[in-house]
Image 1 (spheres, rainbow, N blue to C red):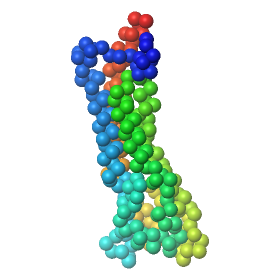
Image 2 (image 1 turned 90 degrees about the horizontal axis):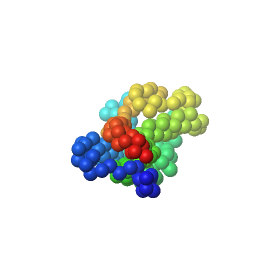
Image 3 (image 1 turned 90 degrees about the vertical axis):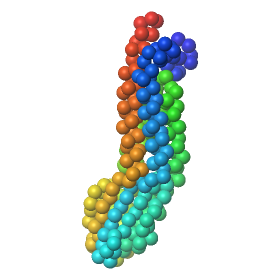
Image 4 (image 1 turned 180 degrees about the vertical axis):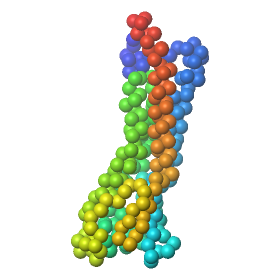
Length: 218
């Protein structure tokens, strides 16, 4: 076996590709679709927070993209000040600064996986596969950090006490009711992960007979 084949995996013959074209094309389409979904997700919010309170009858909304916040950020920061929460702008500064190039990078790795014939393709697609999980874990960490490090000098800090807001679902904070929801960007990233899992399964099923045949010949 050549050095190239050892790195990329054994080359599938033209006859094999023509005979089982769909078998080999489908995983590539799935990886490509996953890369596209990740790129589109950059344009959409990953997390949405809805807040209702007596002084805001129409409610307040926070939309968190991977690199910025939109919505009623100023009003929510004002409310957070009273209970001792830090400003949203202080959350995840490193994550927000690298999020866009990181997502572009993992999307490029998925395209690399499209052309790879190596058994190491799993390593190549792993960052994209687990990206939405890492995002949720990191978001929950920052929610915990903020909720458990209140400013003791804030007017309502003692009354509220330390708390951990849930990353998803309803919660009550003092007189405020909140509802945290996954945004469409996160849903696209999760869909991309599902496509990657399916692509890995189909790729393994397609390549196994060919790899086994080469092993027997050797």
